[in-house]
Length: 132
Image (cartoon, rainbow, N blue to C red; front, side, top):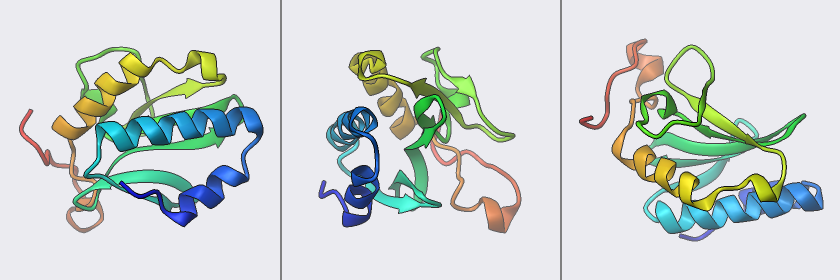
């Protein structure tokens, strides 16, 4: 997967410590979800499968936060619920907190377990996109 210039520009604006985390995440996402399209969406790097957002990250006060749009439905524990739909995430304040094995598990679940966020504005309801 080719990394878009918009994501590289986002990365270049991060501190050295946050850029290390972002680079590690980009590499892991690219390896685990090679079919996903990455782009900056609403100001943050987000990866989509067939137009449906599945994972992204953003800079928060406490550091980098990884968001899985369907994370509340994942079997692997460790994510906290975010928002009123099915999203869940985890904070990564340091590169040492990045657990590649756990993130790879969640990325695999992001492929298998998807709620249809792409159709949410039109349908005004969140429906399952994959069978789980």
